[in-house]
Amino acid sequence: MLKNVHIKNLALIDEADIDYEKGLNIMTGETGSGKSIIISSVNIALGDKANKSMIRRGCDFGLIELTFAAKNSNVHDLLSELGIEDDGSTITITRKITKDSSFNKINGETVTLANLKKITSQLVDIHGQHDHQSLLDQANHIAILDQFGHSSVSGPKQEFKRLYDQYKSLKNEFSSFSMDDDALSKKISFLEFEHKEIEDAALMPDEDEKLRSELKALEIREKESAALRSVLALLNDEDRGVAAKIAQASADIAGAASADPGNEQLKAFKGTITDIESITVDFGRSLERYVSEHEFDKERYSTVQKRLALIDRLESKYGNSVRDVLEYDQNVQDEIKKYTDFRKNRETISSRLATMRSDLNRAAGSLSEARQECAKVLGSAISDNLKDLNFLNVDFRIDIKKADRISSNGFDRVEFLISLNPGESLKPLTSVASGGELSRIMLAIKSSIAANDAIPTLIFDEIDTGISGKTAQMVAAKLRSLSSSHQIISITHLPQIAAMADTHFMIHKEVEDGTTISGIEKLDSEQRVIEIAKLLSGEEITTASLENARVLLKASSNK
Image (cartoon, rainbow, N blue to C red; front, side):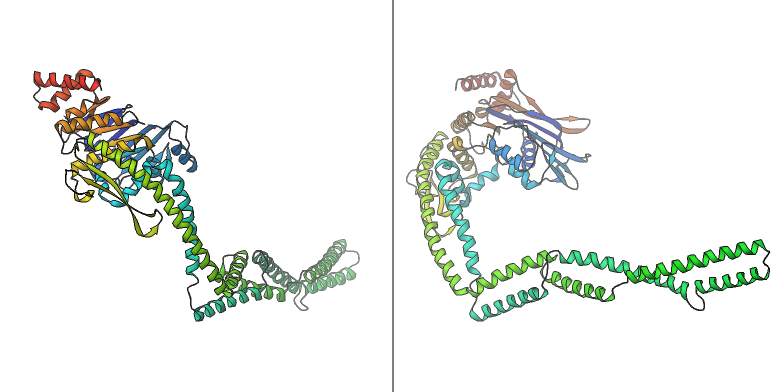
Protein backbone atom coordinates (compact mmCIF):
# COMPACT_ATOMS: atom_id res chain seq x y z
CA MET A 1 0.00 0.00 0.00
CA LEU A 2 1.20 3.51 -0.85
CA LYS A 3 1.39 5.32 2.50
CA ASN A 4 2.95 8.64 1.59
CA VAL A 5 3.91 10.76 -1.42
CA HIS A 6 6.41 13.54 -0.79
CA ILE A 7 6.98 16.03 -3.62
CA LYS A 8 9.38 18.97 -3.60
CA ASN A 9 10.19 21.64 -6.21
CA LEU A 10 8.12 20.26 -9.10
CA ALA A 11 6.03 22.55 -11.33
CA LEU A 12 3.42 24.27 -9.11
CA ILE A 13 4.32 22.24 -6.05
CA ASP A 14 6.77 23.85 -3.64
CA GLU A 15 6.60 21.01 -1.11
CA ALA A 16 3.76 18.63 -0.39
CA ASP A 17 3.01 15.48 1.57
CA ILE A 18 0.03 13.23 0.87
CA ASP A 19 -0.78 10.45 3.34
CA TYR A 20 -2.94 7.93 1.51
CA GLU A 21 -5.17 5.45 3.33
CA LYS A 22 -6.59 2.01 2.61
CA GLY A 23 -9.61 1.74 0.33
CA LEU A 24 -10.67 4.44 -2.13
CA ASN A 25 -8.58 7.63 -2.17
CA ILE A 26 -10.07 10.40 -4.32
CA MET A 27 -8.40 13.63 -5.41
CA THR A 28 -10.45 16.57 -6.69
CA GLY A 29 -9.69 20.17 -7.56
CA GLU A 30 -10.23 22.79 -10.21
CA THR A 31 -8.58 22.49 -13.63
CA GLY A 32 -4.92 23.52 -13.46
CA SER A 33 -4.69 23.13 -9.68
CA GLY A 34 -1.95 20.52 -9.90
CA LYS A 35 -3.73 17.15 -9.86
CA SER A 36 -1.94 15.95 -12.99
CA ILE A 37 1.39 17.03 -11.46
CA ILE A 38 0.85 14.60 -8.58
CA ILE A 39 0.17 11.69 -10.95
CA SER A 40 3.13 12.71 -13.15
CA SER A 41 5.38 12.87 -10.09
CA VAL A 42 4.32 9.39 -8.97
CA ASN A 43 4.95 8.14 -12.51
CA ILE A 44 8.47 9.60 -12.42
CA ALA A 45 9.15 7.96 -9.06
CA LEU A 46 8.00 4.65 -10.56
CA GLY A 47 10.56 4.96 -13.35
CA ASP A 48 9.10 7.20 -16.07
CA LYS A 49 11.40 9.60 -17.90
CA ALA A 50 12.31 12.52 -15.64
CA ASN A 51 11.80 15.80 -17.50
CA LYS A 52 14.05 18.52 -16.11
CA SER A 53 11.54 21.14 -17.31
CA MET A 54 9.32 20.05 -14.40
CA ILE A 55 11.83 21.42 -11.86
CA ARG A 56 10.28 24.46 -10.22
CA ARG A 57 11.67 27.76 -11.44
CA GLY A 58 14.56 28.98 -9.30
CA CYS A 59 15.26 25.53 -7.85
CA ASP A 60 18.26 23.28 -8.49
CA PHE A 61 16.42 19.99 -8.15
CA GLY A 62 13.08 18.25 -7.89
CA LEU A 63 12.39 15.38 -5.50
CA ILE A 64 9.74 12.67 -5.28
CA GLU A 65 9.66 10.12 -2.49
CA LEU A 66 7.14 7.29 -2.17
CA THR A 67 6.75 5.26 1.03
CA PHE A 68 5.06 1.87 0.85
CA ALA A 69 3.83 -0.58 3.44
CA ALA A 70 4.69 -3.70 1.45
CA LYS A 71 3.66 -7.25 2.32
CA ASN A 72 4.24 -8.62 -1.18
CA SER A 73 6.83 -11.40 -0.78
CA ASN A 74 7.87 -11.00 -4.44
CA VAL A 75 9.06 -7.46 -3.70
CA HIS A 76 11.11 -8.48 -0.67
CA ASP A 77 12.64 -11.38 -2.61
CA LEU A 78 13.66 -8.94 -5.36
CA LEU A 79 15.18 -6.55 -2.83
CA SER A 80 17.18 -9.43 -1.38
CA GLU A 81 18.41 -10.44 -4.85
CA LEU A 82 19.55 -6.86 -5.47
CA GLY A 83 21.32 -6.71 -2.09
CA ILE A 84 19.13 -3.85 -0.85
CA GLU A 85 18.56 -3.51 2.90
CA ASP A 86 14.97 -4.39 3.75
CA ASP A 87 13.11 -4.46 7.08
CA GLY A 88 10.32 -6.56 5.55
CA SER A 89 7.60 -3.95 5.96
CA THR A 90 8.47 -0.48 4.62
CA ILE A 91 9.95 0.40 1.22
CA THR A 92 11.01 3.92 0.28
CA ILE A 93 11.45 4.92 -3.36
CA THR A 94 13.32 8.18 -4.06
CA ARG A 95 14.01 9.99 -7.32
CA LYS A 96 15.90 13.25 -7.43
CA ILE A 97 15.97 15.24 -10.66
CA THR A 98 18.63 17.82 -11.42
CA LYS A 99 19.15 19.84 -14.56
CA ASP A 100 21.83 17.38 -15.67
CA SER A 101 20.66 13.97 -14.49
CA SER A 102 18.47 11.98 -12.12
CA PHE A 103 19.23 9.76 -9.13
CA ASN A 104 17.27 6.67 -8.07
CA LYS A 105 17.25 5.12 -4.61
CA ILE A 106 15.45 2.28 -2.87
CA ASN A 107 15.67 2.30 0.93
CA GLY A 108 18.48 4.83 0.63
CA GLU A 109 20.60 2.73 -1.76
CA THR A 110 21.31 3.90 -5.30
CA VAL A 111 19.85 1.63 -8.00
CA THR A 112 19.65 1.58 -11.79
CA LEU A 113 16.48 2.74 -13.48
CA ALA A 114 15.87 -0.83 -14.70
CA ASN A 115 16.01 -2.20 -11.15
CA LEU A 116 13.84 0.65 -9.90
CA LYS A 117 11.16 -0.30 -12.43
CA LYS A 118 11.52 -3.98 -11.54
CA ILE A 119 10.63 -3.20 -7.92
CA THR A 120 7.94 -0.55 -8.48
CA SER A 121 6.11 -2.71 -11.03
CA GLN A 122 5.28 -5.02 -8.09
CA LEU A 123 3.97 -2.14 -5.95
CA VAL A 124 1.77 0.07 -8.13
CA ASP A 125 -0.28 -0.32 -11.29
CA ILE A 126 -1.02 3.13 -12.71
CA HIS A 127 -3.54 3.76 -15.48
CA GLY A 128 -3.80 6.97 -17.40
CA GLN A 129 -5.07 7.72 -20.90
CA HIS A 130 -1.89 6.21 -22.36
CA ASP A 131 -2.46 2.98 -20.45
CA HIS A 132 -6.06 2.74 -21.65
CA GLN A 133 -4.71 2.98 -25.15
CA SER A 134 -2.55 -0.08 -24.46
CA LEU A 135 -5.75 -2.11 -24.72
CA LEU A 136 -5.70 -1.34 -28.43
CA ASP A 137 -2.43 -3.25 -28.78
CA GLN A 138 -3.43 -6.86 -29.28
CA ALA A 139 -0.01 -8.02 -28.02
CA ASN A 140 -1.08 -6.98 -24.49
CA HIS A 141 -4.21 -9.14 -24.45
CA ILE A 142 -2.40 -12.44 -23.91
CA ALA A 143 -0.61 -10.99 -20.86
CA ILE A 144 -3.94 -9.92 -19.32
CA LEU A 145 -5.40 -13.39 -19.90
CA ASP A 146 -2.34 -15.11 -18.41
CA GLN A 147 -2.43 -12.79 -15.40
CA PHE A 148 -6.06 -13.69 -14.75
CA GLY A 149 -5.44 -17.42 -15.19
CA HIS A 150 -2.17 -17.48 -13.26
CA SER A 151 -3.12 -20.43 -11.03
CA SER A 152 -4.01 -22.69 -13.96
CA VAL A 153 -1.85 -21.18 -16.71
CA SER A 154 1.47 -20.68 -14.91
CA GLY A 155 2.30 -24.41 -14.69
CA PRO A 156 1.79 -25.20 -18.42
CA LYS A 157 3.42 -21.87 -19.28
CA GLN A 158 6.56 -22.59 -17.26
CA GLU A 159 6.83 -26.07 -18.77
CA PHE A 160 6.40 -24.66 -22.27
CA LYS A 161 8.99 -21.92 -21.57
CA ARG A 162 11.48 -24.53 -20.33
CA LEU A 163 11.09 -26.58 -23.51
CA TYR A 164 11.09 -23.47 -25.70
CA ASP A 165 14.41 -22.28 -24.26
CA GLN A 166 15.93 -25.72 -24.85
CA TYR A 167 14.51 -25.78 -28.38
CA LYS A 168 15.96 -22.33 -29.19
CA SER A 169 19.36 -23.37 -27.85
CA LEU A 170 19.33 -26.60 -29.88
CA LYS A 171 18.16 -24.73 -32.96
CA ASN A 172 21.05 -22.28 -32.61
CA GLU A 173 23.43 -25.21 -32.31
CA PHE A 174 21.93 -26.81 -35.41
CA SER A 175 22.44 -23.58 -37.38
CA SER A 176 26.19 -24.06 -36.98
CA PHE A 177 25.87 -27.24 -39.07
CA SER A 178 24.45 -25.50 -42.09
CA MET A 179 27.74 -25.18 -44.04
CA ASP A 180 28.54 -27.09 -47.23
CA ASP A 181 31.41 -29.60 -47.58
CA ASP A 182 33.89 -27.02 -48.89
CA ALA A 183 33.18 -24.65 -46.01
CA LEU A 184 33.35 -27.57 -43.60
CA SER A 185 36.79 -28.58 -44.92
CA LYS A 186 38.08 -25.02 -44.54
CA LYS A 187 36.65 -24.79 -41.04
CA ILE A 188 38.34 -28.02 -39.91
CA SER A 189 41.66 -27.01 -41.54
CA PHE A 190 41.63 -23.68 -39.75
CA LEU A 191 40.82 -25.27 -36.39
CA GLU A 192 43.56 -27.88 -36.88
CA PHE A 193 46.05 -25.10 -37.71
CA GLU A 194 45.16 -23.30 -34.45
CA HIS A 195 45.42 -26.52 -32.43
CA LYS A 196 48.81 -27.44 -33.95
CA GLU A 197 50.18 -23.96 -33.32
CA ILE A 198 49.26 -24.20 -29.65
CA GLU A 199 50.21 -27.88 -29.31
CA ASP A 200 53.68 -27.29 -30.84
CA ALA A 201 54.33 -24.63 -28.23
CA ALA A 202 54.00 -27.29 -25.48
CA LEU A 203 52.74 -24.71 -23.00
CA MET A 204 52.59 -25.35 -19.26
CA PRO A 205 50.01 -23.70 -16.97
CA ASP A 206 51.35 -20.42 -15.49
CA GLU A 207 54.51 -20.76 -17.59
CA ASP A 208 54.21 -17.14 -18.73
CA GLU A 209 54.23 -15.80 -15.17
CA LYS A 210 57.23 -17.95 -14.18
CA LEU A 211 59.23 -16.92 -17.26
CA ARG A 212 58.52 -13.22 -16.78
CA SER A 213 59.70 -13.53 -13.18
CA GLU A 214 62.87 -15.33 -14.35
CA LEU A 215 63.51 -12.75 -17.07
CA LYS A 216 63.34 -9.98 -14.50
CA ALA A 217 65.88 -11.83 -12.30
CA LEU A 218 68.20 -12.35 -15.30
CA GLU A 219 68.03 -8.68 -16.20
CA ILE A 220 69.02 -7.82 -12.64
CA ARG A 221 71.90 -10.34 -12.82
CA GLU A 222 73.10 -8.79 -16.11
CA LYS A 223 73.31 -5.32 -14.57
CA GLU A 224 75.03 -6.73 -11.48
CA SER A 225 77.65 -8.64 -13.53
CA ALA A 226 78.42 -5.61 -15.68
CA ALA A 227 78.94 -3.44 -12.61
CA LEU A 228 81.17 -5.99 -10.81
CA ARG A 229 83.31 -6.66 -13.91
CA SER A 230 83.88 -2.92 -14.14
CA VAL A 231 85.12 -3.01 -10.53
CA LEU A 232 87.44 -5.94 -11.35
CA ALA A 233 88.81 -4.04 -14.31
CA LEU A 234 89.55 -1.00 -12.12
CA LEU A 235 91.19 -3.26 -9.57
CA ASN A 236 93.30 -5.57 -11.75
CA ASP A 237 94.32 -3.58 -14.82
CA GLU A 238 98.07 -4.22 -15.27
CA ASP A 239 99.02 -0.62 -15.92
CA ARG A 240 96.34 1.42 -14.20
CA GLY A 241 94.71 -1.05 -11.83
CA VAL A 242 94.28 -0.16 -8.19
CA ALA A 243 96.06 -3.38 -7.01
CA ALA A 244 99.17 -2.70 -9.14
CA LYS A 245 99.38 0.89 -7.92
CA ILE A 246 98.99 -0.15 -4.29
CA ALA A 247 101.73 -2.82 -4.79
CA GLN A 248 104.03 -0.15 -6.27
CA ALA A 249 103.24 2.20 -3.36
CA SER A 250 104.02 -0.60 -0.89
CA ALA A 251 107.41 -1.28 -2.60
CA ASP A 252 108.28 2.44 -2.59
CA ILE A 253 107.46 2.88 1.10
CA ALA A 254 109.39 -0.32 1.94
CA GLY A 255 112.40 1.16 0.08
CA ALA A 256 112.12 4.41 2.02
CA ALA A 257 111.85 2.58 5.33
CA SER A 258 114.95 0.48 4.48
CA ALA A 259 116.90 3.65 3.72
CA ASP A 260 116.01 5.13 7.11
CA PRO A 261 115.63 2.17 9.54
CA GLY A 262 115.24 4.35 12.59
CA ASN A 263 112.27 6.34 11.23
CA GLU A 264 109.26 5.15 13.23
CA GLN A 265 106.78 7.06 11.05
CA LEU A 266 108.02 5.28 7.91
CA LYS A 267 107.73 1.95 9.72
CA ALA A 268 104.10 2.78 10.51
CA PHE A 269 103.40 3.77 6.89
CA LYS A 270 104.96 0.53 5.74
CA GLY A 271 102.66 -1.49 8.06
CA THR A 272 99.57 0.38 6.90
CA ILE A 273 100.31 0.04 3.19
CA THR A 274 101.12 -3.66 3.66
CA ASP A 275 97.67 -4.14 5.28
CA ILE A 276 96.00 -2.24 2.44
CA GLU A 277 97.79 -4.35 -0.14
CA SER A 278 96.73 -7.55 1.64
CA ILE A 279 93.08 -6.39 1.90
CA THR A 280 93.10 -5.40 -1.79
CA VAL A 281 94.46 -8.76 -2.86
CA ASP A 282 91.88 -10.62 -0.70
CA PHE A 283 89.05 -8.39 -1.96
CA GLY A 284 90.07 -8.97 -5.58
CA ARG A 285 90.15 -12.73 -5.15
CA SER A 286 86.76 -12.79 -3.37
CA LEU A 287 85.20 -10.56 -6.04
CA GLU A 288 86.56 -12.73 -8.87
CA ARG A 289 85.19 -15.83 -7.16
CA TYR A 290 81.73 -14.19 -6.67
CA VAL A 291 81.59 -13.02 -10.29
CA SER A 292 82.61 -16.48 -11.49
CA GLU A 293 79.94 -18.18 -9.36
CA HIS A 294 77.20 -15.69 -10.33
CA GLU A 295 77.95 -15.36 -13.98
CA PHE A 296 75.15 -13.83 -16.16
CA ASP A 297 73.79 -16.60 -18.40
CA LYS A 298 73.43 -14.99 -21.82
CA GLU A 299 72.21 -18.19 -23.41
CA ARG A 300 69.43 -18.66 -20.84
CA TYR A 301 68.47 -15.00 -21.15
CA SER A 302 68.09 -15.39 -24.92
CA THR A 303 66.10 -18.61 -24.48
CA VAL A 304 63.67 -16.98 -22.03
CA GLN A 305 63.22 -13.97 -24.31
CA LYS A 306 62.40 -16.15 -27.31
CA ARG A 307 60.01 -18.32 -25.29
CA LEU A 308 58.18 -15.27 -23.95
CA ALA A 309 57.95 -13.80 -27.46
CA LEU A 310 56.25 -17.01 -28.60
CA ILE A 311 53.89 -16.99 -25.62
CA ASP A 312 53.06 -13.29 -26.13
CA ARG A 313 52.20 -14.00 -29.77
CA LEU A 314 49.91 -16.89 -28.78
CA GLU A 315 48.28 -14.82 -26.03
CA SER A 316 47.62 -11.98 -28.47
CA LYS A 317 45.71 -14.46 -30.65
CA TYR A 318 44.04 -16.81 -28.19
CA GLY A 319 43.83 -15.28 -24.71
CA ASN A 320 45.31 -13.07 -22.02
CA SER A 321 47.28 -15.82 -20.30
CA VAL A 322 48.71 -19.29 -20.91
CA ARG A 323 45.72 -20.75 -19.08
CA ASP A 324 43.39 -18.87 -21.46
CA VAL A 325 45.33 -20.19 -24.45
CA LEU A 326 45.15 -23.77 -23.16
CA GLU A 327 41.41 -23.38 -22.52
CA TYR A 328 40.97 -22.01 -26.03
CA ASP A 329 42.87 -25.02 -27.39
CA GLN A 330 40.54 -27.39 -25.53
CA ASN A 331 37.55 -25.66 -27.11
CA VAL A 332 39.23 -25.92 -30.51
CA GLN A 333 39.73 -29.65 -30.00
CA ASP A 334 36.06 -30.01 -29.07
CA GLU A 335 35.12 -28.11 -32.21
CA ILE A 336 37.37 -30.30 -34.34
CA LYS A 337 35.70 -33.39 -32.92
CA LYS A 338 32.26 -31.91 -33.54
CA TYR A 339 33.01 -30.94 -37.13
CA THR A 340 34.90 -34.18 -37.85
CA ASP A 341 31.69 -36.00 -36.97
CA PHE A 342 29.75 -33.25 -38.72
CA ARG A 343 27.19 -35.24 -40.64
CA LYS A 344 26.57 -37.65 -37.80
CA ASN A 345 26.12 -34.77 -35.34
CA ARG A 346 23.86 -32.90 -37.74
CA GLU A 347 21.61 -35.93 -38.08
CA THR A 348 21.58 -36.40 -34.30
CA ILE A 349 20.62 -32.78 -33.63
CA SER A 350 18.05 -32.84 -36.43
CA SER A 351 16.46 -35.89 -34.82
CA ARG A 352 16.51 -34.22 -31.39
CA LEU A 353 14.92 -31.10 -32.88
CA ALA A 354 12.12 -33.14 -34.40
CA THR A 355 11.43 -34.81 -31.05
CA MET A 356 11.60 -31.49 -29.23
CA ARG A 357 9.28 -29.85 -31.77
CA SER A 358 6.75 -32.53 -31.02
CA ASP A 359 7.18 -32.03 -27.25
CA LEU A 360 6.97 -28.27 -27.72
CA ASN A 361 3.74 -28.51 -29.69
CA ARG A 362 2.23 -30.75 -27.02
CA ALA A 363 3.25 -28.27 -24.32
CA ALA A 364 1.87 -25.37 -26.39
CA GLY A 365 -1.34 -27.33 -26.80
CA SER A 366 -1.65 -27.86 -23.04
CA LEU A 367 -0.99 -24.14 -22.50
CA SER A 368 -3.59 -23.25 -25.10
CA GLU A 369 -6.18 -25.52 -23.46
CA ALA A 370 -5.57 -23.81 -20.11
CA ARG A 371 -5.97 -20.42 -21.76
CA GLN A 372 -9.16 -21.48 -23.54
CA GLU A 373 -10.76 -22.40 -20.22
CA CYS A 374 -9.56 -19.16 -18.58
CA ALA A 375 -10.77 -17.11 -21.56
CA LYS A 376 -14.33 -18.33 -21.05
CA VAL A 377 -14.31 -17.38 -17.38
CA LEU A 378 -12.53 -14.05 -17.89
CA GLY A 379 -14.68 -13.10 -20.89
CA SER A 380 -17.83 -13.72 -18.87
CA ALA A 381 -16.46 -11.79 -15.86
CA ILE A 382 -15.48 -8.81 -18.01
CA SER A 383 -18.91 -8.82 -19.67
CA ASP A 384 -20.58 -8.74 -16.24
CA ASN A 385 -18.33 -5.93 -15.06
CA LEU A 386 -18.94 -3.97 -18.27
CA LYS A 387 -22.68 -4.23 -17.67
CA ASP A 388 -22.08 -2.92 -14.15
CA LEU A 389 -20.41 0.05 -15.86
CA ASN A 390 -23.48 0.83 -18.03
CA PHE A 391 -22.51 -1.14 -21.14
CA LEU A 392 -25.97 -2.62 -21.04
CA ASN A 393 -25.99 -4.51 -24.35
CA VAL A 394 -22.32 -5.41 -24.44
CA ASP A 395 -21.00 -8.66 -25.81
CA PHE A 396 -17.36 -9.25 -24.89
CA ARG A 397 -15.34 -12.30 -25.87
CA ILE A 398 -11.75 -13.41 -25.83
CA ASP A 399 -10.81 -14.94 -29.16
CA ILE A 400 -7.93 -17.43 -29.24
CA LYS A 401 -6.59 -18.59 -32.59
CA LYS A 402 -3.55 -20.58 -33.55
CA ALA A 403 -0.77 -18.35 -34.84
CA ASP A 404 1.25 -19.15 -37.95
CA ARG A 405 4.38 -19.79 -35.93
CA ILE A 406 5.29 -20.73 -32.41
CA SER A 407 6.84 -18.11 -30.12
CA SER A 408 7.86 -17.75 -26.49
CA ASN A 409 4.15 -17.38 -25.65
CA GLY A 410 3.15 -20.63 -27.36
CA PHE A 411 1.11 -20.68 -30.55
CA ASP A 412 -1.89 -18.69 -29.26
CA ARG A 413 -3.03 -15.43 -30.81
CA VAL A 414 -5.27 -13.75 -28.23
CA GLU A 415 -7.56 -10.84 -29.09
CA PHE A 416 -10.31 -9.03 -27.20
CA LEU A 417 -13.50 -8.63 -29.23
CA ILE A 418 -16.47 -6.48 -28.30
CA SER A 419 -19.91 -5.44 -29.51
CA LEU A 420 -21.43 -2.42 -27.76
CA ASN A 421 -24.82 -2.42 -29.46
CA PRO A 422 -27.45 -5.10 -30.24
CA GLY A 423 -27.14 -6.57 -33.73
CA GLU A 424 -23.52 -5.49 -34.16
CA SER A 425 -20.95 -8.19 -34.82
CA LEU A 426 -18.01 -8.68 -32.53
CA LYS A 427 -15.08 -6.53 -33.56
CA PRO A 428 -11.57 -5.81 -32.22
CA LEU A 429 -11.43 -3.11 -29.54
CA THR A 430 -9.36 -0.89 -31.81
CA SER A 431 -12.25 -0.45 -34.23
CA VAL A 432 -14.99 0.09 -31.66
CA ALA A 433 -14.10 1.77 -28.38
CA SER A 434 -13.59 5.50 -27.78
CA GLY A 435 -11.17 6.94 -25.23
CA GLY A 436 -13.81 7.23 -22.50
CA GLU A 437 -15.09 3.74 -23.20
CA LEU A 438 -11.56 2.36 -23.01
CA SER A 439 -11.26 3.82 -19.49
CA ARG A 440 -14.30 1.89 -18.36
CA ILE A 441 -13.21 -1.26 -20.19
CA MET A 442 -9.85 -1.07 -18.40
CA LEU A 443 -11.70 -0.68 -15.07
CA ALA A 444 -13.85 -3.71 -15.94
CA ILE A 445 -10.73 -5.75 -16.73
CA LYS A 446 -8.95 -4.70 -13.52
CA SER A 447 -12.10 -5.55 -11.55
CA SER A 448 -12.23 -8.97 -13.21
CA ILE A 449 -8.64 -9.89 -12.45
CA ALA A 450 -8.50 -8.24 -9.01
CA ALA A 451 -8.52 -11.53 -7.10
CA ASN A 452 -5.45 -12.69 -9.07
CA ASP A 453 -3.68 -9.34 -9.06
CA ALA A 454 -0.87 -9.24 -6.48
CA ILE A 455 -0.17 -5.54 -7.06
CA PRO A 456 -1.71 -3.82 -4.02
CA THR A 457 -2.16 -0.25 -5.29
CA LEU A 458 -4.06 0.83 -8.41
CA ILE A 459 -4.01 4.44 -9.60
CA PHE A 460 -6.61 5.63 -12.11
CA ASP A 461 -6.16 8.93 -13.91
CA GLU A 462 -8.95 10.20 -16.19
CA ILE A 463 -11.19 7.25 -15.29
CA ASP A 464 -14.23 9.54 -15.66
CA THR A 465 -13.39 10.78 -19.17
CA GLY A 466 -16.57 11.25 -21.22
CA ILE A 467 -19.04 9.94 -18.65
CA SER A 468 -21.77 11.44 -16.45
CA GLY A 469 -25.08 10.65 -14.78
CA LYS A 470 -25.93 6.99 -14.28
CA THR A 471 -22.69 5.81 -15.87
CA ALA A 472 -20.68 7.93 -13.44
CA GLN A 473 -22.60 6.39 -10.55
CA MET A 474 -21.86 2.90 -11.83
CA VAL A 475 -18.15 3.68 -12.29
CA ALA A 476 -18.09 5.02 -8.73
CA ALA A 477 -19.67 1.83 -7.41
CA LYS A 478 -17.16 -0.31 -9.31
CA LEU A 479 -14.23 1.69 -7.91
CA ARG A 480 -15.67 1.28 -4.43
CA SER A 481 -16.05 -2.46 -4.95
CA LEU A 482 -12.48 -2.78 -6.27
CA SER A 483 -11.18 -0.84 -3.25
CA SER A 484 -12.24 -3.67 -0.95
CA SER A 485 -9.30 -5.75 -2.22
CA HIS A 486 -6.92 -3.01 -3.43
CA GLN A 487 -5.87 0.46 -2.46
CA ILE A 488 -7.37 2.73 -5.14
CA ILE A 489 -6.15 6.26 -5.89
CA SER A 490 -8.08 8.24 -8.48
CA ILE A 491 -8.48 11.78 -9.74
CA THR A 492 -12.04 12.73 -10.60
CA HIS A 493 -14.22 15.67 -11.59
CA LEU A 494 -17.46 13.85 -10.85
CA PRO A 495 -19.38 14.19 -7.57
CA GLN A 496 -20.73 10.62 -7.80
CA ILE A 497 -17.19 9.23 -7.70
CA ALA A 498 -15.91 11.74 -5.10
CA ALA A 499 -18.78 10.80 -2.77
CA MET A 500 -17.63 7.17 -2.71
CA ALA A 501 -14.21 8.05 -1.27
CA ASP A 502 -12.92 6.57 1.95
CA THR A 503 -10.38 9.39 1.93
CA HIS A 504 -10.85 12.65 0.02
CA PHE A 505 -8.07 15.08 -0.92
CA MET A 506 -8.58 18.50 -2.47
CA ILE A 507 -5.85 20.05 -4.60
CA HIS A 508 -5.94 23.82 -4.83
CA LYS A 509 -3.68 26.58 -6.07
CA GLU A 510 -2.95 29.95 -4.56
CA VAL A 511 -0.56 32.86 -5.02
CA GLU A 512 2.14 33.51 -2.46
CA ASP A 513 4.61 36.37 -2.92
CA GLY A 514 3.65 36.61 -6.59
CA THR A 515 4.21 32.87 -7.19
CA THR A 516 1.53 30.29 -7.89
CA ILE A 517 1.77 27.14 -5.80
CA SER A 518 -0.35 24.03 -5.37
CA GLY A 519 -1.56 22.78 -2.01
CA ILE A 520 -3.07 19.47 -0.93
CA GLU A 521 -5.63 19.18 1.84
CA LYS A 522 -7.24 16.11 3.36
CA LEU A 523 -10.92 16.92 3.84
CA ASP A 524 -13.04 16.21 6.88
CA SER A 525 -16.72 15.29 6.57
CA GLU A 526 -18.02 18.88 6.39
CA GLN A 527 -15.31 19.99 3.97
CA ARG A 528 -16.27 17.05 1.75
CA VAL A 529 -19.86 18.31 1.62
CA ILE A 530 -18.63 21.69 0.39
CA GLU A 531 -16.21 20.21 -2.17
CA ILE A 532 -18.83 17.84 -3.62
CA ALA A 533 -21.31 20.72 -3.74
CA LYS A 534 -18.75 22.60 -5.86
CA LEU A 535 -18.50 19.63 -8.20
CA LEU A 536 -22.30 19.68 -8.49
CA SER A 537 -22.86 23.40 -9.07
CA GLY A 538 -19.50 25.08 -9.60
CA GLU A 539 -17.86 27.70 -7.40
CA GLU A 540 -21.26 29.23 -6.49
CA ILE A 541 -22.46 26.86 -3.81
CA THR A 542 -26.21 26.77 -3.30
CA THR A 543 -28.41 25.34 -0.58
CA ALA A 544 -29.63 22.78 -3.11
CA SER A 545 -26.11 21.69 -4.07
CA LEU A 546 -25.16 21.32 -0.41
CA GLU A 547 -28.23 19.19 0.22
CA ASN A 548 -27.51 17.10 -2.88
CA ALA A 549 -23.92 16.62 -1.68
CA ARG A 550 -25.15 15.34 1.67
CA VAL A 551 -27.55 12.98 -0.06
CA LEU A 552 -24.74 11.61 -2.24
CA LEU A 553 -22.45 11.11 0.76
CA LYS A 554 -25.18 9.43 2.78
CA ALA A 555 -26.07 7.14 -0.11
CA SER A 556 -22.41 6.18 -0.62
CA SER A 557 -21.94 5.44 3.08
CA ASN A 558 -24.76 2.91 2.93
CA LYS A 559 -23.11 0.91 0.10
